[in-house]
Amino acid sequence: MLVVFVSIAFGGFLILLVTLLFGGDADTDADMDGDADGDFDHDGGAGHHWLSVKVLSAFITAFGAGGAIARAYDASMLWSIVTGLVLGLIVGFVADFIIVLFYRQQATSSFSIGKLAGKTGMVALPILKGQFGEVTVNYQGNSITRRAKNANATEELSQGETVVIVTADASGFIVKKQQES
Image 1 (cartoon, rainbow, N blue to C red):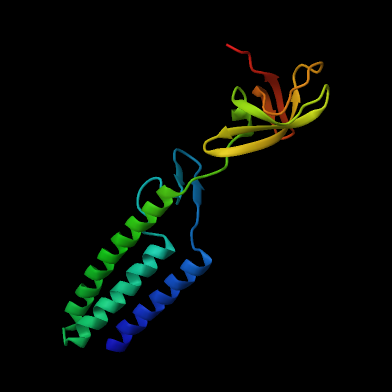
Image 2 (cartoon, rainbow, N blue to C red; image 1 turned 90 degrees about the vertical axis):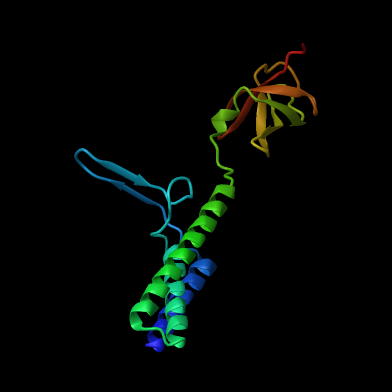
């Protein structure tokens, strides 16, 4: 039976290795008709990830290793299984904790460009009368540069001038000179 536990540990380790090298995260969204809706997002935001491939493979690896170690010390089959389960649960909890920790450390650079309206930026390339230039704005720790046009088409904006973004969309910014206080 030692061979069975070693095989389980080896199989779990191979699965864990594959998921670490090639990924293994998944988002799940389930909607049901009737009175219930369900949504589970595997991003570390809420709850545990016991159904993730990484946690399950860590559990399987530890279960097999724990059972093999117990069998190597001549423990009975029942104690080998109990040892494997206990070690598997401990390693599974540790793996889950580490995965949650890593997901919480991730930052996203995705945002709605429209949220930049009202923010202050700086002219990076001069905006000539009726022409496009470029404006740079700092938002959520990111420096975002987009083509920009002056809301006042009869006024030029020089490089380095501070502007306020009036509108922001995929085509660029419409800006106005910031009023001096």
